[in-house]
Length: 165
Image (cartoon, rainbow, N blue to C red; front, side):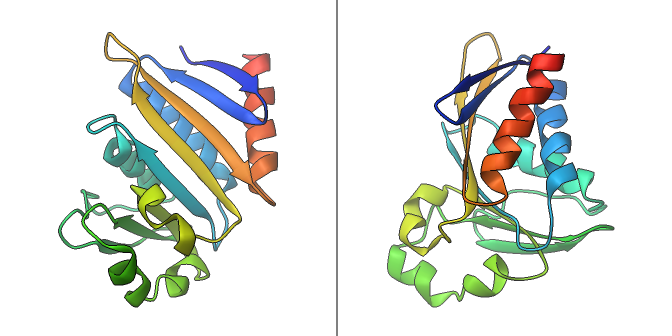
């Protein structure tokens, strides 16, 4: 079971299993609209791609979603929304700036950026940030913070859902 806490506008979600991770992805996918931006960061191997796969499936992406580490950006068509999956780990700030990321950020789909803190200056100020870290015994801690509308409200909704479970 997932345990949620509210701490200075940040939601902390404990995932004790892959199903808990998928449950969080589904909850956030229900809130997604065109132009949604999710900045993912965290420990190496903590589950950024696993979370992204679950999120993509939740918006109706039927293709296999895998890490875009070497391709940088992968585009998928979902039943509800397009899904733009980025991995900027190997990019310099200058290289990322040249990619024209704004077309994705302000496009008609959801953009998930793995290792987003590496291009923080290029990200829109309104976004959902998720930091994932190992929490022992296979568990993961998700620290979720929303900046601007609607993301701050999403965190409040997650908190309220956690209180009612």
